[in-house]
Image (cartoon, rainbow, N blue to C red; front, side, top):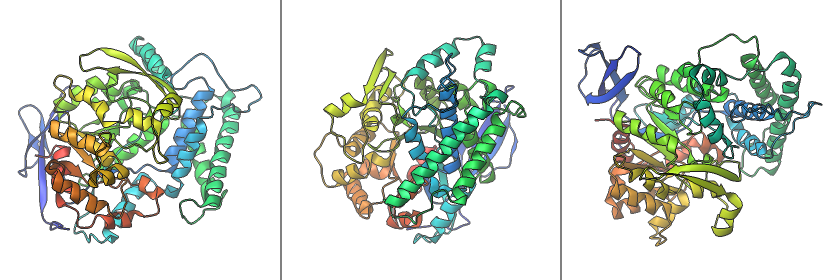
Amino acid sequence: MTCRNKTTRLRVIYNVTLTKKNKALYIPCNREKTEEKPSQNGITREVAMNQGNIDIHCHFFNFAFAFDELLEIGWRWLQGNYPYKSDEKLFEPEGIPFLPDELEGVVDYVVSLFRTLAHSPEENYLYEQKSYRESLWNPDEPLITVPLMMDIFFIIDNGNAQQYKSRLESLPAAQRKAALMPMKISDKEKTNFDVFAKDMKKRVITAISQKNAMNTQGRTAMPAGSAAVAAELDQVIRAFKADMGPSAKPRAVPSGGSVQMTRGYRKHLEALRALRKKNPDTVFPFLALDPRRVGIEKLMRDQVRIDRFRGIKLYCPLGYLPSHPALHPIFKKCIERNIPITAHTSPGGLPSLSGHIATSSRMKNGTIVPVVFDQASFMATHSVENDENAHSLFFADPDKWLEVFECNGFEKLRVNFAHFGGEKHIMAYAARSTDTNNWTGKIIRLMKRFENVYSDVSFCPCDSMKHAIETIMEREPVVRERLMFGTDYVMIMLLKCGLSNYFNHYKGINPDMLTTNPRKFLGEP
């Protein structure tokens, strides 16, 4: 593997026009080094990116983030405020939580991340850098990372979010802002919240104990109820109560209160912004957008800037199609502002926990049609293997993007189809599978049709993956120009391989996957 000398740098200059409303529009200009100086229309700023290898797909969220979201989702549901405010409170008078079965799936998600116990996003970033340096790559420079934000708040939504969102957006500005203010826990609700939080803590610790007993993933067992787990959960609960309490000090809310800013989402956003500010040459985060969240257009305008987020992250298996009507204006802005998109594209991953979802789709001719997903009906007519889920197969199928790309003006949209269809599909395609439903094949066909379609091989730890990729590149030259390297850390920690070993699997991979291709995807000149 070729590593550049430390003194070699790619200097990327952006013209940033600061308007009276302090909004920024940026476009790549040239590669010449320049000092910051005033321009005719505003300020020209320099943005530097190291000339090093790039992990185009990673995550730095942690156990605490996931438990925060579990508390937010569960408590809002009990208060009749999930996903948006309604009139009915579901908490039983005697204070015993009555929770939807789907919430157990969120508990499992929290438990899946307990290996990141007490690790902050910054510590996860530093751990990846450490693993990279200790790998067989023997790098001269730090790894350039593209951490993808997650938005799991709508994971148990069955379609109500779309209806509530429409009502909220039709309210006068003042009422809408009031409805979107961060949730509070009143003094009279504190006892009920304590009962609820204690129950969530017990569920997480019990699930960890069960996983340790099964030892299905070959990890060193962590005793359930250990001081480390209990202390971390208690710390999250205390912070949640302090932040949501009636006496909590007012704090600035991103986008001025016009965006639904749930606590876990806000904390995750702020952590990545802080990490970007501290590591401006090696951290280029992507902002998670869910079309069911109120205010995503403003959120994008405010947060996708050179000093904040570099692109957009979509996770369709959580219950929406790429052709969702609320994403149409987002895609228009992405084209106007040269913003890349990464979208989950494998048959596995984290799916919605609702078995029946009512949503909608904007067809390429502009017509909006209702769409209903029913898990039982889908599984009765489709083959769903053990490492797959029905939601990913339905919502994340690469062909679902045709309604987007074939829309007038959207053919130049720059999209990374993450995971290249998944490990099993990659291996099958390399072995010359003739299955027209092979997702790797579908992505390659999109690459041939649309000049800005990319893909990455994150979460693909198979020992023979490097050879499979080389085989595909020999057969399909377009893949050599569009495929990128990714780890999918921290999710890769769910497997036995370890992060350093994951890097080792890819030692000697085509260098374009590590440098040229991701730079083009990110919009580098």
